[in-house]
Length: 207
Length: 85
Image 1 (cartoon, one colour):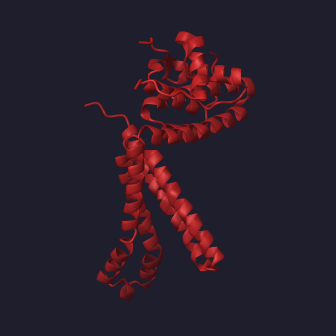
Image 2 (image 1 turned 120 degrees about the vertical axis):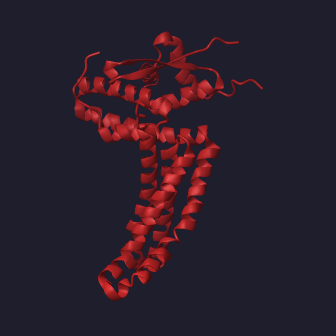
Image 3 (image 1 turned 180 degrees about the vertical axis):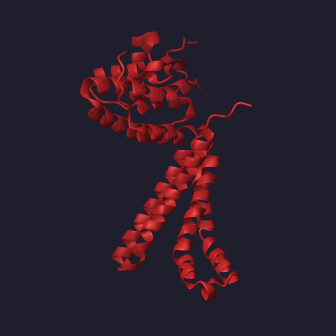
C-alpha cells in the first residue's frame, strides 16, 4: 500500500483514542489511518482530514453508546454518583474560602485580594471541586472514563442552558455572568476524566 | 435460552461481508464492502460496535493480527464466523 507523509488530525485521533475502549483503540485508529492515507493520496489531504473528523465524531458517538450498552450499571451509577457528589460538594468552596479570609484577616490587610477571593476565588473553587468530582467519576467508571465524565458534563451543561433560558424569560439577566463559570465547571469534570484516562493509558515503566 | 439472541438488520449487513471476505475480514475491508453494497458511508465505530455486539452473542469471533508499519505499528482486528455447534 503506497504511503503518504500527510498525518491525520492529531486532536481527532486523540479524541477517538480517549473515548474508545482500550481493547479496540489500536485497531480502530489503525483502520482510520489506513483509509485516511488512501484518501489523502487519491483526493488530497484537505478532503482526507474532513473525512477523518467526520469519522472520528461518528465513532465517538458510537463508543459513548457502547459504553452504556456494555456496562450500563457501572457507567450510569458513576454518572449519577458524580451528579449527587457535585451537588453536595458545590457548597463547600464558599465557607472554606471565607474561613481562610477571616483567619488571615484579608479584609483588613489586603482588601483587593479579599475582593478577588470573595468573588472569582469562589468560582475557581467550584471548578477545582468539579475537576475532583470528574476524577472520582472516571476512577469508578472502569474503562469508560470519558463516556461517564462527558455524559455528566453534558447533563450539567443542559441544566445550565435550561437555567439560562429561565433567567432570560424571567428578566433576571444579571445572573448571566455566571454562565461561563457554570460551563467551565462542566468542562472541568471532563478534564478530570481526561487526567484519569491519560494516566491509565500511559505505558507502565519497566522495573 | 440460546446464547445467540436477536439479530437486527444492520447486524446482518455487518456480518455478511465476513462470509465473503473470509480470512481477510478486518475493519477497513468490512467497511468498504458495506459502503460498496449499500451506497452509504458507514463509520468505523458503528462496525466495531456491531461486530462487538455480535461477538458477545456468539455469531462472530475476532483476533488481533500482527502490527504493520503502514498503520504506524497498529494491529488489525480480524473478524470471522465461528463454527456452529
